[in-house]
Figure 1 (spheres, helix red, strand yellow):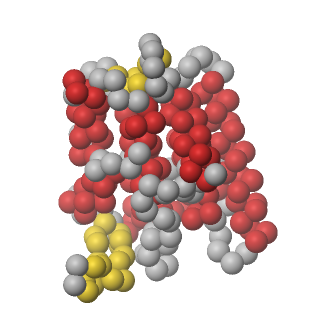
Figure 2: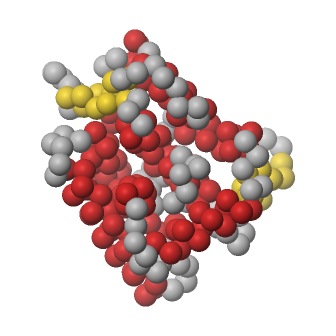
Length: 232
């Protein structure tokens, strides 16, 4: 995956089909929600960048909370907005699961992509409603790059980077695999699902083995449990 984009940006751009540019994934707060996965991706990225850590809660409620480790910005609008909120004193005891719920921060990802001229929103309006919504790339070369890399890793079994493994875990634990799988071909879908799960398992092993209680692993586990609960 290209490191020019955040994980959340990669999720939302790839969720729009390359042929139609129409959104393939569900939005909202339910199981398999792209919004929930983008919010998780923002948290994971902040952890990977050393801006945020996960701490064991001393008592009551959910087991984990998020802590800001530094005030240094990342330079990305969505990441920095979430980072500031995590560091706000009023959110000191907010649970990890509370942060995983879709929020305004996930909603800033697409506007930021448009501001940076990476993508453009196109739609028709019917009263207060949007119709025929599309997210189209402005930077066609970058869009082609991330799709070619995704295809190579997930469809042709080329060697995955650590970032690819993390992306696979977000797809698997976010129940998003079906939105990225080949359409109208059952065998190809099953092969893609197997590939996603294989790569996701590698990321979970890497996370859990060297450092007990790794923050990224905790967030991914919380996402999986949240989606599992929503599905029942």
